[in-house]
Image (cartoon, rainbow, N blue to C red; front, side, top):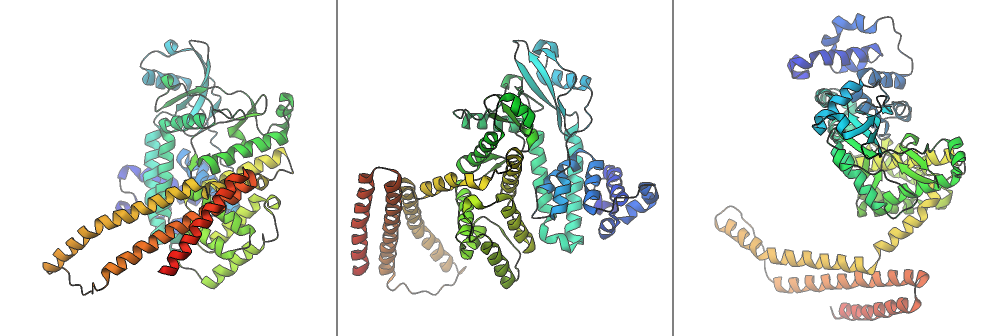
Amino acid sequence: MIRETVGHLRDLPRYRQILATLVRYGYQDVVAALHLEGLVRPLERVALGDQVPPQDRARRLRLVFEDLGPTFVKLGQLLSTRPDLLPEPYTNELAALRDDVRPFPFDQVETILREEYQRPVEEVFAAVDPAPVASASISQVHRAVLRDGRTVALKVRRPEIAKVVQADLDIIKNLAHLLEHRLPVLAPYRPTVLAREFERTVKRELDFSTERRTMQRCRIQFAADPTAHIPMVFEEFSTPRVIAMEFIEGVAINDLEGLGKLGVEPATVAVTGARILLKQIFELGFFHADPHPGNLRVLPGGVIAPLDYGMFGQLNSKTRERIADLLISLLAQETEGVLRALEALGIRGEPVDSRSFQRDLGDLVASYSDLTLDAIALGPMLRELIGFVRANHLHIPPELVLLIRALVTIEGVGRHLDPHFDIAGHLQPFLRALAVRRFHPYRILSQTVRTADDVQRIATLLPDLLSQTLDSIKRGEMRVHFDLEGFGRLVRQLTRASNTLAVGIVIAGLLVASSLVLRVGPAPLAYSGFALGAVLALWLVWNMARS
């Protein structure tokens, strides 16, 4: 038993601490289901003590994570972003987990800085404030002044935190394996996959080099945007364990009194914050996944400075377009369109009752059929979508979970600043821009060229493939009976069909693009597109008739 569940004898005390904490907060049923009572029973009386656990099971889970330290606090925070895995009471409770922990001593900070810079701290900085500005489970931040007078924020990783986290990660992966195999009800939620995802997230956060690259990337992307300010990183003073960045003053975005002193309208700040996030999502495909008030500062003039670049999501162009398809299909009451968009987004799961699935999806679509985009409250809509996903045991890719969390969070921030704020109304320009990019003639031409390249590559590989197949048949490794009569005619028909398809795609692109240009651009260019499309259409009809 010990060999199966512990792996290494040195981890046994930590296993007992975890299991005893579960027992203390009333999760004996979980320990029993894992068949690990033997590790806890001798300590059970001590573990329970005189405490009576709260009646609320969700609150008890939060207390478990708080008691078990930094790694489990991070795990709880990750689970709070997964409403597709946990009911809303649990995600709401786990969202209350905070990274605010007791700071580690300043002499340890000095030791880390001296080790990283390979010289005395006073040779690098004119001054370092011993009192931390913020203290979290992974790191803490100190204000410092460089020798040239510039003020910086020093983010310093906790000493030995990497070893502590790695030991806990090994235990979490082992417990996830046990949960998946000994609690069949949890198997569809793939605890082992979640554990690996959590390990990847935490290790990325432990390496400050990743966060520095993220900050530099965002700074380049918003260099020409006067409404956003990305803190500058001082590379010469940054290492894998230390980040030296521009110190941001400003006021918290939810500080209405502070915004008033800056002379900034809260409603304007709400719109600016939403526009920055939507630009990151739908234009750049690289977005801040945790835009809560503590991570957003407002500078004079209403400029927003996002902080903490440890959690970012990434979406490719196809995923952004499919998200737009999902919203558009919801508005058009097209159940099939919603279904196709969900499938294209990778939201799928184990086989379910198809009749119930279609009924639930139809009810969801119908509830938005009479609404325009600016009349939709995005947060409730996304929560209903998550409810549909959970009810049908579907799985959402991690990046989409981060997207949903970011949108719901920024809408909540906006509603705090302006009770009438509605982020859905600000989606329209981005959805229109996606539609224009999708049907842009240059993109259609590029897709046609790629299709032609694929056909050419297949045609080039086909002789070698046939030769290898014939050799296998000669050696007796394969027996195939087929008739090559009319093979040349088939090739010609396939070639003609592919050409016809390519021309059809070009015609469709010309018509859609010309229609868009006619609405927003010079009319002669649009009519030229229509004319060229008509000529190609006539040729296509003649070619099809001849075939």
